[in-house]
Length: 322
Image (cartoon, rainbow, N blue to C red; front, side, top):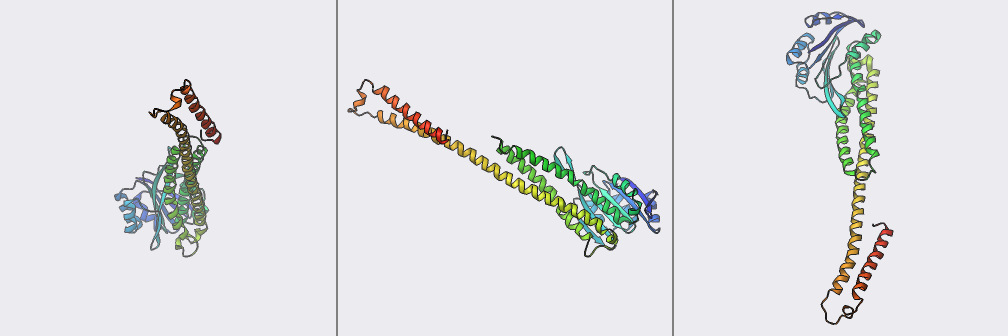
């Protein structure tokens, strides 16, 4: 679905134009066309391919979707894939934006999983005509910068969730539940890491070293995006390490709890073993057992068993086993 199709000349907006006139505007000097699509259909991409002369392999990748974040060069044009990350009910939703960039055009196509559009990016770019004069390369930077900036709320959500779990680590009886939540959080962090890492590697190609000619004047801006991605990746690594430590602490707490139970069971078993031993001794059917004929034999036996049990109970209590 077509969202916008706008022509710009020398940093100023000319007008919203119909798709059929794109080729006429891109032929003008110092003019480029910025097109935004959502849930682009193969027919729409075919029209854009004809108007802009898009490479067939790039169009094929955009049609298939589910691409890894990357930047590919096709002659004087670029094909860029970035992933959007959004928080929805404490879950991480991944979307995709495919961007075609040439010297006189830029085309962005986002899928339905990306609920947030880029109207704010267009508004920002139009308010900075001196930057918009840099052409499609600056628009590419603005789009990538907006996508990366939207990663930070997701990062905050992950850190907040981790803090809540950490507060419950030493709460009795919550260890197993904590471990489950930590593993779920680890899965979210890994998902985000798989989005950030390849994009960081790709953006690194747009500043320093061999840079595509259209990006020569915007290298410092892409370096800024790369720095943001590096910060996010470092934070994700820190969260992942903290999760690993928290899991180990929770497992240790589970082991300690089980050890406490085992000690209690062992203490009570020792106490009842004494009763069993005395009962077994006096339960033997020998003829000559003096205490069996004694008037106070039974009370004395019970008193001895109770006394020994109380003594052991006191000792185990003092030792912290009961």
